[in-house]
Length: 432
Image (cartoon, rainbow, N blue to C red; front, side):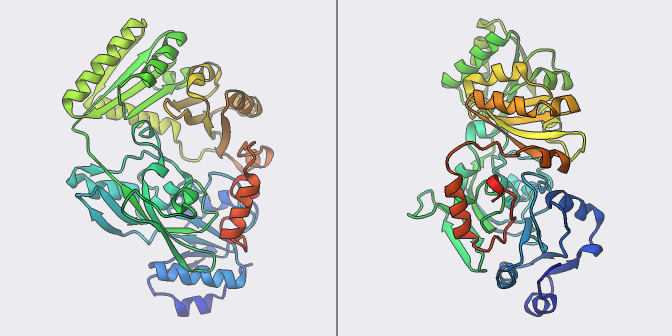
């Protein structure tokens, strides 16, 4: 079905660029791709080894009006809507170089195909790290993390992806390379490409390079778990937000999630402090005093038990594709978190400062409650978006739950950045 001229492409591209027929792909590679496309299958898999080759591919696709499915390592290809049609898959996984590390300035520039786990391993000897904690960090690439704005629990202290990106490079619909930002915080007038592309699910262009701000690795780390009466826990949440304490993570966990982690039969507030040892000790003492004044039970985790706890939480809330599960991204006002979690089925985790979180529905009866759960989130001035689900669920439900008034603007931007609708057509809000 592809209108790409394979012979012409092969004559233009570097021999290291991978061009494979669909039938020749490993089934493990095919599987996440089929979950992302509505009906048909792409004809080719293309993994360019240079940005110049990627540019050539996109330019040729524009000439032939050939839509494409963009990906890195495909770890989150099942998120969002179903692509209407894709002639080929364009992967950035071979664009995997760390281009520049300004140690003194705490910045790093990497290609989009660099895996987060590899980047953190590179930064570790320099006692620095990129404070994002996304799904599937061992497989996830920088491009995919930025495209889905998947930051995790560390957003409590360090903000989301948009707060960490200083600059980026993209390949436009016509194959030309565009750049925005740089290695400093100040930006220029016009489109803020970093913010536009963060969370755009690859619908505006191909991200090829990103510059991030980094942070020093913390010297010490401790985690506290506060449990008890829901009203007292809600008071603790609000008091923590208003206090001078600076946890790196603060998540409220639902009762079902607490049970699954063997942490008890009540809602829990999981708080992590990471800093110099003296600061961690002082902040732990202050939170313990706050919890005791509210009559909450307090458990402390350090060293190996702490790492095991956070990894178990991640495994539970970021499951690999399972046809029996539906994973949602949710958001509610911070002062409504406890209220929502008291009524929530499945497993739910919400980051305290942002009110953003994850909801995993594990049974048919829970999945049937999706409309009510969305209404409840919206009633708490929030949202519910279906991220990962079988195709049948995605075709039955509206996925994004967007009810704002910016859809016209989003469609206008899509037309401006992608006039031929080449990039992940149909994947984003409103069928963009």
